[in-house]
Length: 183
Image: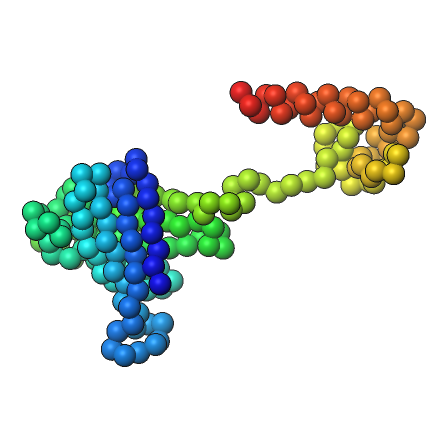
């Protein structure tokens, strides 16, 4: 299995490829190794290796970049990358950390969130709208075989008295909202 991402404007890596490989001839989830090959905007590549810990993928930098120029653990590139999924897999968070020189401790450099293309994450819930007030519609009303919703008995009475004008005002209000959303 492999996972690829591209982010041309990213601060550290503009692309990366994550691959898996079972270790020690085991199929256990705990014995799966992961490798991440990441490339920066200048085309230099770094390699990270790791495994899953507490539902997070923890990847540590190899000692040297693939081009052999400098260590991954320097201040410019992350020494550890932690990847986790949230929102039912619709969001992926990547935590970039550098290692404090001469220590086992890591310090946060940045955290980046990625949203799966086509997901509904962050779009909010949809509610049935009252055609009179724009509030939450809870009472169904019908006109010309089509069902609409209103929020209260007062709106229901107004709709039943003159559904044509209520629906015309509703259509005008929605058109204005769409126009404002474009700006």
